[in-house]
Each structure stands twice: as C-alpha cells, then as structure tokens.
Length: 460
Ligand code: ACO
Image 1 (cartoon, protein in one colour):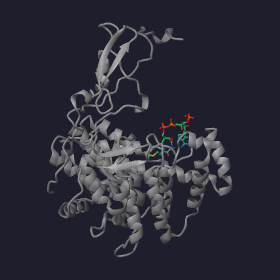
Image 2 (cartoon, helix red, strand yellow):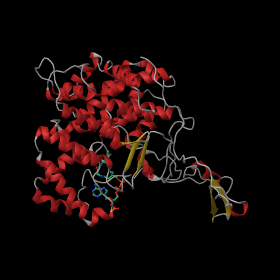
Image 3 (cartoon, rainbow, N blue to C red):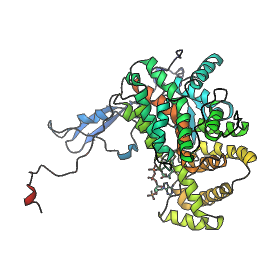
C-alpha cells in the first residue's frame, strides 16, 4: 500500500487572516488589548493573570488559584463538556448559530454537490483533496481491502437471528483487532495508515453482513467493480442476479448521505474515539467504542427513533397532540435539537433535496409528508422557536434510508459507515498532537467522609 501524505499536527484553529496593519502616525497608534484574563479570588483577595489563546483559557492555569498552599487549586466543573474544548482540531468547522459546516475548510454543500464519499474520506483523513492519481490509488486501496476474514462470519453466525445489527457491528469491529495484532503499533504511521484503510474498506462489509445475518440471507461478497456506495447496495440487496447493478440515482443518494455523516467535530462518538484511543489501544477497539456511543438514541440512534416516532404518531391528524406531549416534556421530538446547532442543521437542508431525488425513483413515502408537516408546525411554535430547536441530520435521513429499503435497525449502522473516516481522522489527530495524553477528567467528590469498616452482623 503506497504512502499518502498525511497532515501533521498544525491545526488551523483560531488563525486569523494575515494582513498588514494600517499605516498610522505614532500619536494615533492604539495599544493592542492584552490577551489575558485578570481574576480576583474573593476568598483570598489575590489577583491572577491568565493568558487567553484562541478564545480559551487553559484549565490547568486555574490550578495556581489556591486558598492556601495545601489547597489543590481551582478546577472548572463542566459536566457533559458544555463549554470545554478538549483539543485543537483542523478537521471540521461548525458555526452552530449560522448553520455552517465545513470539512477541512470546504463547505458541506459543495462537497455534497460535487464530491464523492471516497474523495471526502481522503480529504478528511489527509487534510487535502486528492489529485486524480491520489484518488485512484486511495480508491484502489479501499476497494481491495473490503473482504473480511471468514472467521468473522462464524462470529456473526453466533448472534441470535434478531440481534440488532448495530450490536453486531460494534462487536465485529472490535473483533477485527484480533485479526490484525500489529494494529497496536499506533505510533507507526504506516501501520496506522493501513488500519485506517482497512476500517474504511471493511465497515460496509461488516454492516451488510450483519444485515444479511438478521434476514437469514446468504452473505453477498464485495464486488470490486462497483463504487463504494454501489457496493454497499450490492452487499445488502443482491439476491440471485449474476451481477448486481445498483440504481445510479440511489447509489448517488447514499453516497451523499455518507458525505454528510463523515465527520462532525467533537460529538459524543468522536469524543469516545479520542478518549479510548488516548489509552493507546488499537484503532479497532477505539472505533468499537465510538460506534457504541453512536448507537445511543440521543446520538446516531436518533434516525431510528424518528421512524419509530412517526409510526407512533400514525397520521397527520395526530401531530398537534404529539407536539403538545413534546411541550409538556412527556416525549422528545426525535431528530430535533442539537448541542451545537441553534439554527437549521445544514445537513438536514441537503438531505431534503436528496429525498426528492430518491422519491423520484422509489415513489413518495407517506412518512415524508408527515415529517414535513411536523417540521412546519414545530418551527412555528413558541416552544421550538424559544428553545432554538430545528431538525437535525437524523430527522430526514431515516425517511430516505427507508425509501432505499433499509430496515430501521440498519439506520445507525449506515451512519457508522459514513462516520468511519471522521473517527479515524480524529484518532490520528489525537495521536499526532503533542499536547494530548491519556484522557482523564477530574471529579468533584461528593461521597462519604472517611469511615470505618463495620462487621456485617453489626450493620443495620
Ligand atoms: N424535543 C423537545 N425538547 C427538546 C429537544 C427535543 N428533541 N431537544 C432539546 N429539547 C429541550 C430540552 O428539554 C431543554 O428544555 P429546557 O431548557 O426547557 O429544560 C432544552 O431544549 C435544551 O435541551 P438539552 O437537552 O439541554 O440540549 P442538549 O444540547 O444537551 O441536547 C440533544 C442535544 C441530545 C441532541 C437533544 O436536542 C435531543 O435529545 N434531541 C433528540 C435526539 C436527537 O435527535 N439526537 C440526534 C442529534 S444529532 C446527532 O447526534 C447525529
């Protein structure tokens, strides 16, 4: 496998455009504001100056703030990382208020309209769009690593017929680490690169085989003549035909969905990938953890929940009642809301366009009309407006997946296929960042003071 240039540690975060300062006479020159924060500790009356860099303070700078020499020093308390940057990253930029998403600087709209998933995966992993020769080689490498060891199939056969395919996916990704023991050489760039190629190549195979297992269908092996997304359709849906020919429109729609899911900066699963990867475990184990995080209904499992919710609502006439239940917090409107986006998720906008493309081929899905109506009512409602709740990527993606004939349980697995390059790029960035080490948050201990062991017969 030939080497490709990989990005080094330099992150673009916080960089301002360089430019010459305007000419001024000495008397007019203004003093640049100090890039620091003055903190007065009212407990001691002492004042500290803490540097500000890229709009952040370094949390460990707070440790100098003590009430006495014995004091541990001040910490910040931030459950769920609401306002804590855990890394410097040059992969994905999001402006949640403006609804902007860019991979390596390229707007998601342009990549979705003009790029392909493998090209986007190359961009995310390497930092730059590939030349024709680089893309050919990358495509060749990914295409020729799609097969999995036959023993993985035996492992798969051990799952019950009704095993959730995401559970099977998480387990088989983890199992891959036992087939590639060299993968634990995480400091070796060539070894690292090989595992990244393998994971991007094999994720669809594991995903499709998990699906075939759940339906009792024989496994359909990868077809190297097909595109990445065409091959996903082949491995999922091939039956008796000698050669599966994916519908070009549906193949393109799936490719766009993969592009939209390819990375999303420090979300729950990327954070899991980084946190577990920071222990220097192999990437298969770290990615199994990331996929497990994605499985949850508040993250990548939400697309599955949207479909179940639409099924529960049942018909247009029940929408107002459902909205009422959301407002009394009896239920959540799945596929709405986001930690970062307080505006329309740009991916949801693109997905709506893809939906039109898909429905031209498959015919209209009645669930789409219900989703559009649900969105229309929600976006006019005070509760949603005041909470800044807009549709996220999961609101419409499930409806498209359903139109493509994927069963609901496969939705988070499809999300995982698209997210694989993002997880790997986050993992690589972590490992090549000299500021990073094993992730280990602090805690505020609120348990018992020291107490003595009580023999069992004396306990009440
Ligand atoms: N339906 C109804 N109310 C909601 C929703 C929702 N989907 N999302 C948030 N809210 C409300 C909360 O009840 C809370 O209200 P309050 O301030 O009156 O108590 C307020 O909005 C803020 O919500 P939080 O839960 O604090 O927001 P947070 O940033 O922690 O959560 C999350 C974000 C988990 C995505 C949340 O919006 C949610 O649960 N959405 C539904 C699940 C979903 O669609 N997840 C997919 C996200 S995209 C992805 O992971 C790929």
